[in-house]
Length: 188
Image (cartoon, rainbow, N blue to C red; front, side, top):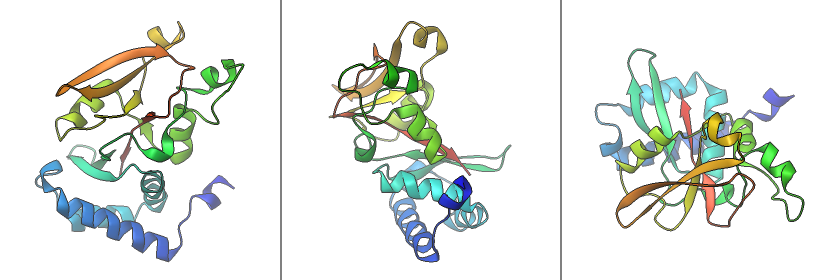
C-alpha cells in the first residue's frame, strides 16, 4: 500500500522534472561538472526517488543537486530553500518527543516526516556544507540529525545562520516553533 502512495502521475513527473531542471540550470554553482541529462536519466529510472523529490518540493524544500558521488554513482539532493521548508515547520524533533508533549503537542515530528517522505534529515556536517552554497535559515532554523548521546538526555540539535555565521544549538526535543522545520537530503 505504501508503494501505491509513492507513485506520481505522468503529469506530476513532468512537472517535477521541469521544476528541478529549471532550478538546476539556474544554480550551476551548486553542482559544477554535473549535466542535467545524466540527472534526469537517473530520476526516470528511480520513480520512487522522484516521488520523494516531489514531496520535498511540495513542502517547500526547493531540492537541488549539490554533489555527485562517483564511487556510488549517486546524485545528492539537498533542500535548498532560503528558509526552512514552510510545509515542514512547527514540528518537534522525533516521535518520542511528540508523545512526551502532554499539552499542545505538534501534529508531527521531523524524523517521522522525513522517513515518510523517503529522505534523511541533514546531519551537522551536511548542514554546514549547505551553508557554503549560500545563506540559508537567516530568519528560520532547522532541526538536524542529533547524536544518540545527546538525544538520550532529551535534547536535539538545530542550526541557523545569523550575523553571517552558522550556529548549531540545542533545545528540548519536544519543543517546536513556527519558524523551525527541517531540511532533508536524498541520494539518487
